[in-house]
Image 1 (tube, helix red, strand yellow):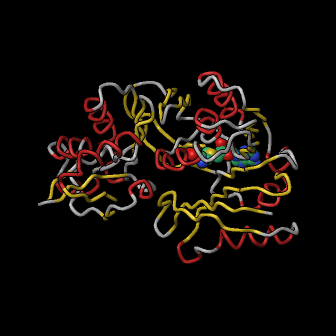
Image 2: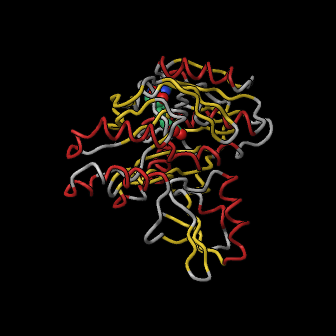
Image 3: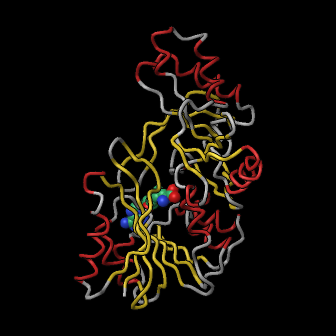
Length: 333
Ligand SMILES: C[S@@+](CC[C@H](N)C(=O)[O-])C[C@H]1O[C@@H](n2cnc3c(N)ncnc32)[C@H](O)[C@@H]1O
């Protein structure tokens, strides 16, 4: 868990920057240690605080999740306290929380407690992870009612149903980075568009000529259409289908490959480019083979008779123990 460590006199300025940019970790409090102040931030926002010290925070002070622990620890036997969840996701007015088997009998209590702590939320779903290439969520209702919501982030609205499509708050910094990376008049192909995770912020905050947004899952595609309407963006061309077969060729300045397991699609992305351009390639990669994403891009480019310049290699988030979600910006020419 990261924090920016700044001298006291700089704390207010940097705290405001962290709040404004969405970098501030809402689950942890700002803490003062001697002459320094630690401002907790989400992973992936480090670049925003160039010139300041980024630390792995020791003894963080939790905000709402501390309340959850405090309340639950009075009601749950002591030998189970170590399993009380410290983190959960709030998507719109819905809470998603991972609960270990040890606390199975306390799921309703956890759900009800969360609704008390967050009165603006109306349902709590237990989160069992996502399955398959379509990244469908596996969730179960444990308190309240309802699964459809509108999540607000970075000036964008994302309507979704947490039982049908995923939303990863951990990818927020990457969505914000993508929002402003597009240059005026560019043509973008978003090969795994989902509900518009990247297509919507790109269209709201930049001025692309067109964004072709391809999505295979009709549920996600339905929300993509709704989100285009909600955000009043006119430059998105939604396409329902498998990007392996429906990706347009020879038209893009930029291709987004926002799926953590999409290496087989790299040749398709290269062929979508107007001869040359940038690919944002995502992969969940074990740390032991950290160069694999770059090697995969280079190999695919070579087969297509192209050269590659790696512009950026960025960690998006920790994915699972020993595995990280990374994105590679590669210029193919
Ligand atoms: C869930 S998103 C990834 C999340 C996103 N990067 C974020 O910021 O949270 C991946 C999407 O790719 C879609 N998908 C998977 N295979 C596909 C394919 N062959 N063609 C088009 N879309 C596909 C899934 O249905 C899913 O909506």
